[in-house]
Structure formats: structure tokens, C-alpha cells
Image (tube, rainbow, N blue to C red):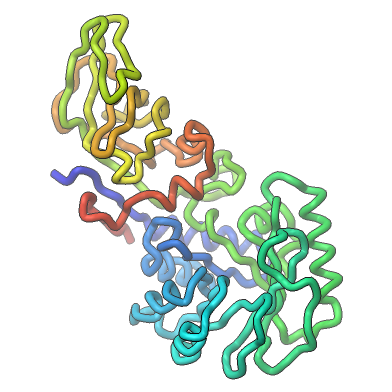
Length: 341
């Protein structure tokens, strides 16, 4: 038996793409598959998103784009690199038919370029747009707080609208991320760039079902050992959990080396379909789960999926679903990877 297994549901990716495309109200959907598809596997997610209606793929680096180009099914896909590129990468981008985002350095000839204007993120972006050239195919910006600040998001939308009002209609205008797409119809413009929602994870930290989204990843393991603790006995490093009465625990062979973070002590998983609490210190290769009875070795444990939401884990860890997802070792040799079509 494998230590754990990740199952990626491509049908959920497709349906999430279809949902986002409907919400976008006529704008194109561009699927963000950077960081190995937010930990889910970029090539597989990209193929499913395109089948669900996405018309382009967005990544952060030229190297990420080249990995997609190496997949036969993605050879002709439109790919936009949103991060900066050096001189070597410019040459690679040209030969690989990539589109690049520029917000500072001189615009190269012969490569389709999207100009990024800063409307309030205060990070990458031009303060004003230069004169258009033949290389420019789009103009973009990025929302800073669409998940939390309605007033500032509306201000950014209006800034972007004003900055691009006089541009040629042939230039693609794109601003909205997942949160912007789901909550601010005026942010859609010509295309929306959706990442986290594509994977069925809420950008708002809430239940993704509220927005009609389906989590696409299932992470499963098993109880490798059931152990009875007597009062005063502890489990794990630092004796962070000490039994005050006779207690059964299940030891599950995953830990922070697999992406189950140290700060997830206290979160819940499913043991044979029942919610149970993770106790003690999460170690590199194992976690302990509090049980209400002895269970058999090989009893199934669900770490994500089947109602165990990544948003729940994020709240326990004091972070966001993005960080939990991208930290999962879904392509590790320690885990089995299954694709569900």
C-alpha cells in the first residue's frame, strides 16, 4: 500500500472552468496554472481547463510555459507568462510562441506583449501606458483585495477602465482574478484570469460550493498503527499531546514532507468516514489522529476531499488555501498519483 495517494478529478476542473466562464458574462476565461497548477499538476489541469472552455493558459515563468509546450496536447495552446523574463528567456519565449507581460524593461520586437499597469497592487506595473506598438496585444492589471475590500476593488476597476478607455478595441483588456470574477462583473472586461477557483478552492476562504465550485483533489492515506495511550502517555515530539484518560490514537504515515504542515495540529481528517482530530506534533513522516475506539490497521483516512476542505486546514494553520495547495507534494515519489477523467 502506498503511504498516500492523490486523485485529481479532471471532471471537476472542467466543470469549474464552465462555471467561471458563465460567471464571466461573455469574457474569455484564461486558466492560471502556475506553480505546477497550484500543486495539482499543471499539464493535466491545463488540458482539462481548455476542454472546459478556457481559451488561454497563464503561468509565472518561461520555464513553466516551456513545460506546457513540451506536452503534445498543449503545443498549440495560447500561453501567457505573467512574470518577468531575462534575455535568455526572451529568446526561448520567441521560439516557443509565448506571450509575455511587461511592466518596466524595453518592449522586445517579435514577441506578443501584454502591458501591465499598476492600479493599486503596488507591485509589478507601469504608472502609465506607453504609446502602442505592433508587439502589444493586451493590457492588464491585478486586483489587490477583491476577496476583502469592495471599495478599493471598485476603485481599481475604475482606474483600469479609465487608463484603457482610449485603446484600440483589438487589444485584450484583462483585470479580474478568481475573486474579481466571482464578485465583480464590471471587472471581467475582455478576459478573466482564474487560478484558485479553477481548482475548486474558494478565494474567500469559505465553502467553495457557495460559488458552485467543486474541489478537484482527493488525498487519502491509512491508519498504519492503532495505539492505546494510558493517562500520562504522550504522542509525538515535544509531548504536545498527553492523554488524560485511556485514549486510542491512529498513526498515519504522512507528515510535513508530504505537504501536511506542522501547523495543522488540531485540524480534522476522516477516519473510515468519521471526522477525527489531528493531535500532537506533526512530524516529517507521520501524524497522530485521536480515535474513539481501536480501529484496524489499513483503515482508510481522508486528508483532503469528501467534505474535508482545504479551506478548513487553512483556517487552522492561519493561512490561505493557496499556500496549503501549492505546498502539497502531489508529484512526490512518496505518494501515488491518480487521474480521474
